[in-house]
Image 1 (cartoon, rainbow, N blue to C red):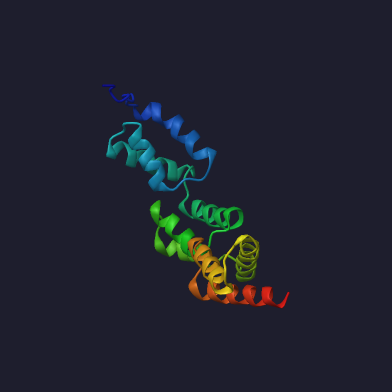
Image 2: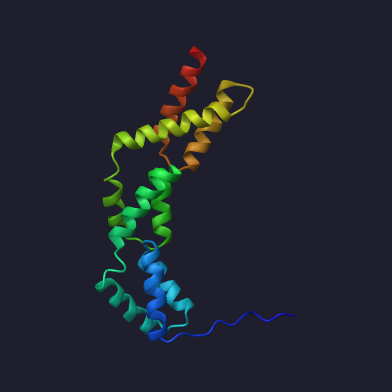
Length: 165
């Protein structure tokens, strides 16, 4: 039986340059950084002290992380607000901050993205009836994190326009 590889425990002095590099590579939440520090073998007290230093030195900024996450997931992956919100909650971001940044998403861009994704998916969906295709589209868009009202509306609009062709 193989034993698990034991990671060497780092001192706070050894962990500092590693965690600074980790934070510099891309935006991170406080929860992600704290978890990484604990993985390095630091005590909770040492990890918290280092977090305070990283916040002070602007290596971590929760609002900056949240903004990067929201706009990144929206623009590149086409996620809706609900899926973005779940992703941020999973990494310990405050609900008020999530709502504040989500309000910064331009409503027109949001509806345009939903329409673009829906039209692209509609062309790929197969089904014996228009209704079944519409349900598959709705399920897909809900999985992407868009709200029910917008999903039902765009699915009806797209299916109606496909019968006109």
